[in-house]
Length: 132
Image (cartoon, helix red, strand yellow):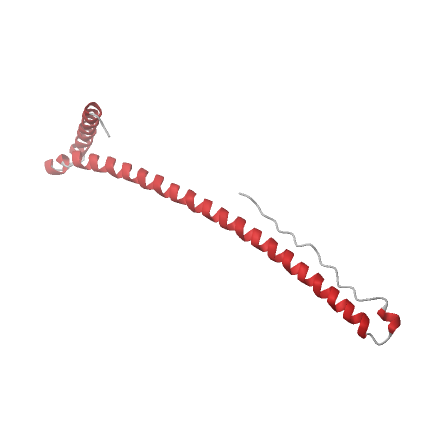
């Protein structure tokens, strides 16, 4: 909120700017009514610049909040993906162990049964995260 002195200064600056624009308008051949509108136009231009600055600041704060929400969501998705990969690997190893015991019991040639069933080795998935 402005005090009386700053409001007077702003009005004086508006008048000075309007006078400057009025002189330019007079040189450009504008009518008296068009030149008289320069005070209003200067004030309007300042108000629009202030509103633009407020809108820009508001949008930047919303963007920062959205970025934070997305980072939290990304971290949650990575945690879920890693847990799902661990669960699938555990299930795979469990199924291989069950199938191996069954393979040893049911194999026709007992000389091969002693070898047992070995599951193919899994490669470790690499989850790369770039924190920008």
